[in-house]
Image (cartoon, rainbow over all chains, first blue to last red; front, side, top):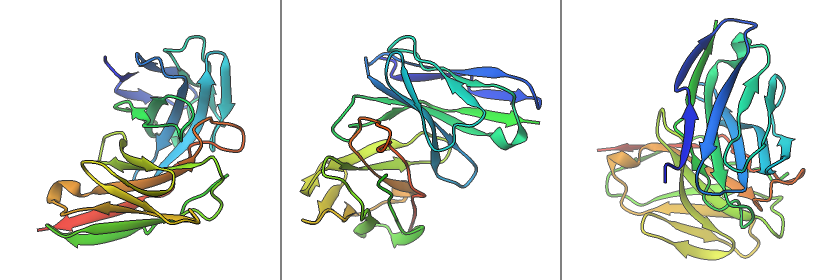
Length: 114
Length: 113
């Protein structure tokens, strides 16, 4: 199993550009989520999904869209990049229930918006 | 939405036992308590999870009192490689509108030789 994979590892965008961060998992997990982590800060939940076709907002959803057309993939789309979105983005997956038992995190995407 | 409160930082020395306490006064009946470890430039890694009383695995123990309003992560005989940020999460894992898996600010544990 590859676990949770994220692409790209690094990305530089100009203000106003859009892009999609990719996330995939091969563990057949129902629950997937996206977090952002700013330097020296904790993780903040952007969006999450409890299954294919179902998504919901987290703590900081503005400026981001998600979709979940398959169990395996959960892409995060930045609509119009802003410098405030400079951060490290982590995707995670887990089985549902029982406290979201053992979320598996991807290696992260380091995004810089200039 | 169950929120957690942890100390911002803790210091320890190699070989000591470290106890990190997390407060979660609004924990719900179906909520589990989960702890993660994060090293710089890496995603968090699951350490341990529990619902009540005590849970132990090969790396840590988790103590949960009867009222479940707090929990304590215990790391026995820490080493330099245990220097990391430790997060406590509370939730039922179903990601419902009122119960998302939210990370708190975490506790930075610094282990010195």
